[in-house]
Image (cartoon, rainbow, N blue to C red; front, top):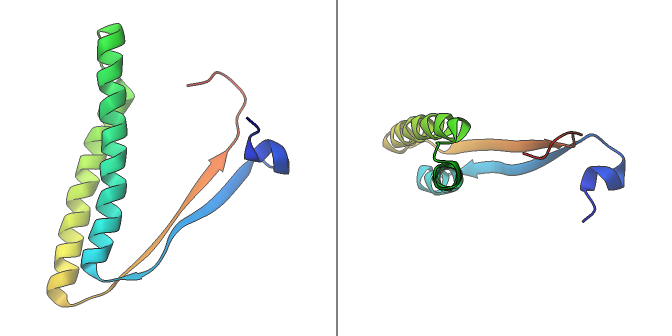
Amino acid sequence: MVHLCCIKKTKMEHIKLIDGEFDPLEAKEILLNMISNKIQFHSIRDFSSDIRTGTPDKNSRKRLSELREAREQIIAFLEKAKKEGWSVNIQSSVNISCIKGEQV
């Protein structure tokens, strides 16, 4: 498999994921689906570590806590937006870079 950064000879890619205005219900669906996927990823990673090694994945446990807190903040913000009749502007991107070293 050839990596994107190896093809373009760059060290970082900037990719726009979300860019637009949404009503609060659409924004909630988009953002909570993203958070739910991340929570599922870290839950499985933690479970797998516990099964394989008998120890939890500390990084995943930390991220799970952070993601659950972020989910509550998003819900509160979007409930207020809905109550006030606001639209929600979401700008989200990801920066991906290639690094040499051990595979995680």
